[in-house]
Amino acid sequence: MEKRYFDFRDIFQAIRYGFSGRKIAVHLGGLVLAYLIYQILVYLSLFVVGNTAAQDFWNKYGLLPALPFSDTGLTQTTEIAMWIGIACFACIFFLASTVVSKITIEQLRGDFFFSVSDGLTFLKGYWKSVFGAFIGLLLIQIFLALIPLGIAGLGKLPVIGKPFLTISSLFMLIGFFLGVLIALIAVVFGVSLLFVPAVVATTGADAFETIYQQFAIVWNQPWRTVCYEVMLFLMKLIFVPIWAFFCLAGFSIVMLPISLLHTAEMEHITACANLWLGGAIEKLTMLPYINTFGVFNIGIAMKEASAFTTTVTAIFLTLTMLMAVGLVIAYLFSIASAGNTIAYSVLRKKIDGHNLLEPFNEDVIETPDVAREPESK
Image 1: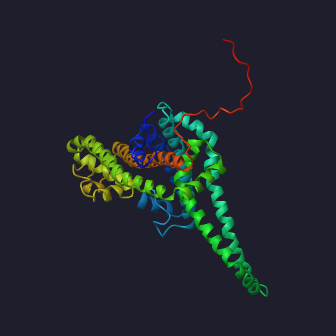
Image 2: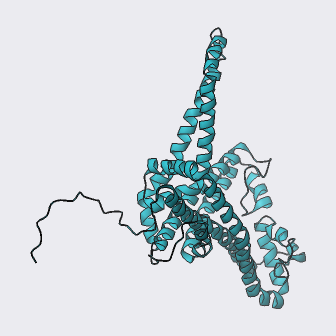
């Protein structure tokens, strides 16, 4: 097992542990699943709306995911479907992050052969802890928020409303502390979005223990948490664009000979892909150095009719570009998952001295010592 410092120096290892084929593949699989669910929900809602809603949406966005607040012309049915899709994406992300965190902590413990299959097996037993922690924090927040809302509502009642508010004002100091508690839980919930998968993966905790650990992080190590997350953010800001550059360079190198020898055909194919991606390729080429080799040229080929072979090739080009974008996002998520796992192992060591990197068997149950007869020599 590698040497650990249990301080900020360990956070830099997030880049190496995040750049892993297994972890990127897990998040990429989650992204693909979330993307399919989102698009199916959106287009089903558009077909329910009827008329030309689906065709108009396709002409504008194609296969490009559109957020509910990006278009004011959407119907309420489609907006609801989009928000459901976003909720599904969040659920899938946290599940994938738990698997990646489990792989990371086992690697930190010295088991470099811990597989994705092992991570999924772990997830089957502990996914309830992940969602239970989020739901528990939300229920606590809602319960506390209902107290001032209930008082305000009772104050609207005729006859007894104003006297009730007058009596309630005597407990203003308690209300102040209640407001502080609500604000604290809001901060804890924000932190839980970062550390719940890491806590479950590293400790195998249930929902209640996971919630407790979120409070422990916020209460005992707030500034370290902020510093570590800022460090992770800066590392993402540096290394994710580098990974995106290599993905773009690899795509350009492969496509360059074809673009040079079959210019007209490639322009037509790229034009079809651009239409199916809602004009994303055209917008992408406006960025500096993106289309240096001319592999994304569209030109006047957009107006030509598409042959069957061109359509098939354009489909594969579209899917390839979507997967390339997915790889970049998956690496971003992989750094986040691995980095938060490392950060939590450091924070836990600072909080109660528990070294999460020591290998342990989750199935072992400690039993009290019993008297034994001395062994004969």
